[in-house]
Image (cartoon, helix red, strand yellow):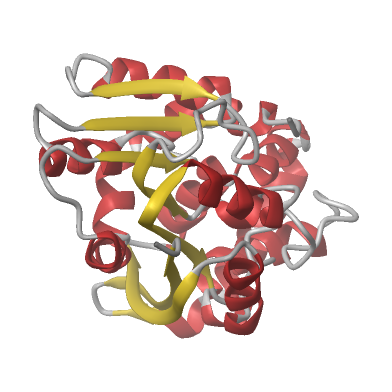
Length: 274
């Protein structure tokens, strides 16, 4: 399992910001729900479940006779999930890597990964594992971010950190980075190589809003695990410089009501053959 300590470090911040995160990702959530079409009594595995709010939605959809297995590779995130949704009778929370869930073959009806697949060290292995645990005819759906220029709300802070020396040798396009699976063709190949059929990729437009540049910087710098750790280790002067640069980077998105960014995600889905 890869080092997940930075994501455990920001787990509490994810819990504190769950309302804003869920509002922002609502179009992605709806696209994922449409892709897997859950029914009462089914079993669903969520990989990289974070603070657990999507797992809560799944629990309502599969009902008391169904089962939700909410997993995260970061123990801190799993701890937050247990606090927030651990009391739901049809939910279990596990710490495991996306490529090694420990579940039996053909165990679940659906596997969902909302904004977690791109952080896998080996996304191919993660998708292969999803295929293994799915029943015949079961559905896999994953959401990833498109590229950095389509998601300035996020990339602007990382670029500011790099420009001021707060991070070094980190590219968001590298394997395991937030934009590492931004290309639709790459997503299709991942699923087809794992044996999925009827593979499709849907572009999902979002709008990300903040009251001002300070709120924008605070949100992104608190939730982006590796970036948050790097900024926490930086001097006050460097952190202030990063915040100033980030504010300069997003001036074109300032409106009368605050900062408003267009954003783009992709949802890839496919079915395991019957």
